[in-house]
Image (cartoon, rainbow, N blue to C red; front, side, top):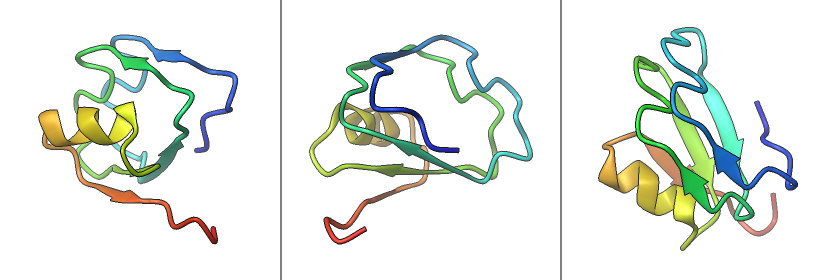
Length: 72
């Protein structure tokens, strides 16, 4: 899944228990992700832009992530 650049908030339980979700890209335009947005997504790895809100969220919530390379 790739979140569109126009999205600024990901709500609570947005991907609740999406156990088949494996990869999701969250652009730097996302400025807030509510707690529980990825609750139960045990197999998910988030791709983020370096120094973005999404990177901080992933770190804070112990969600596996990697930073998008500028060439991608």
